[in-house]
Length: 107
Image 1 (tube, rainbow, N blue to C red):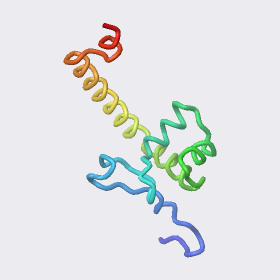
Image 2 (cartoon, helix red, strand yellow):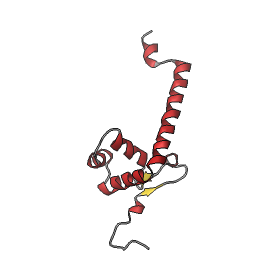
Image 3 (tube, rainbow, N blue to C red):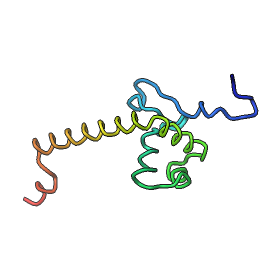
Image 4 (cartoon, rainbow, N blue to C red):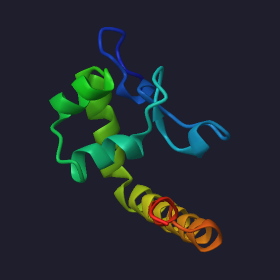
């Protein structure tokens, strides 16, 4: 069944491409990833309206991203956790090799 021409097909708001934005789902025409929207909403406690203003998105774009996030919450949350672990590991590796900038400046 297809959507009538008088309605906006919300399935056109979100896309995912290998090699673009790390393969993460994003809002079409913006490059803003769904996980970014989810973090703004869950962690930064921004409302959909605030997210739209901050990221220069329409409310339908924000709501489509949040709907996609909640429909795929386990997978997206797991990917965010993996990214955080990898970032922490890289940061710790850098600090072990070069030290912290603050410590180097205070010498």
